[in-house]
Length: 412
Image 1 (cartoon, rainbow, N blue to C red):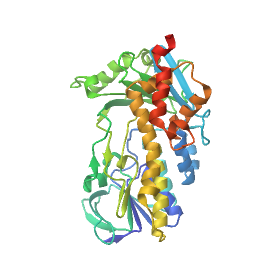
Image 2 (spheres, rainbow, N blue to C red):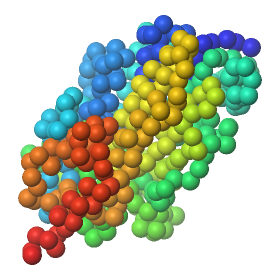
Image 3 (tube, rainbow, N blue to C red):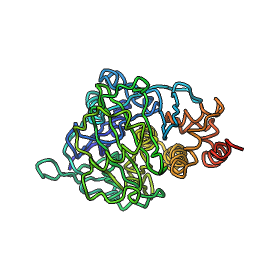
Image 4 (cartoon, one colour):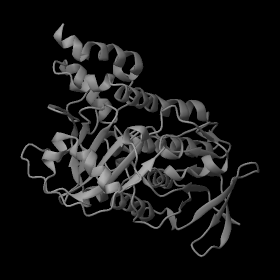
């Protein structure tokens, strides 16, 4: 039996930031990671808001020193249509630039910073059982050699991402409200020479005939990029053949991507992930809380995953600190409710993207500048700013705006 004040499961961005925030408040923190870093992870395009939490954790100097590609916005394309949003021109105060990162390197930087600041980090440690029915939480852990040990703590934060450790072990999973979708992706040496291409923005492209299929192109520093396509499994059709060939065939169906990538070197095998949208019955329980993707993952279209994860890390770290200091914490009011403001905002825009309403808004040519700044704030990650009308009432206002931006309305 080992004793630690706080145990964090997972050393990705949510785990590293939560651990460090708690360590900076004077707590003893153990972070357990199932894999060995560096390791590949999807989700390379960060939003501007998430850097506020990186800054609070004292990690910004290391992130800047890593030389990641600066990102200042998001561009959208569909056939001959093109538009972009500059995160520096937005409604909500806060950083207007961020980074596009190779997650293996980015996650390692944050985990190293957590360790440098005093968090104990153990790699290749798998949590195989969890008990929260005693006086203190207990985790059974298996190390790289197959030896098992038990860790007892005052509180557990699950930041295990797609591993969803406590959701699995404690029967917390429930179906997502979003239909299942699939992504095929790879990293390439892009060799883009088009002078009109902006490497400081993620490029999101809509399939010219099927609006439910979309592509990401995320430039990295050093001339490489992440590229992928997302759609329902039925839209993809039979994928019994070569994944890379399927990916390249779908990319060739998007004229703008075909034009950008004639010289690309496809040097990394394609991969796929499906059924990634997930949810849980509760974000917290006696002695634990779930962070980021370990609780709920929506969809990759607006790159919201890391931002939601880091927002949850900040909220949970504050609540744990208060609770261990003797205060009474209402986890629903102090953690779940404020976190879900942003989650529900992003959810409304994800639904709006796939039913076409938000696509109409994005490509509308006569948008008022003030409205564009409000939308830009959400795309930059400021989905918790309820002074923004499109956050305060996201579903209704998006529907009203979508009606005004319908393509048919342009010809009336």
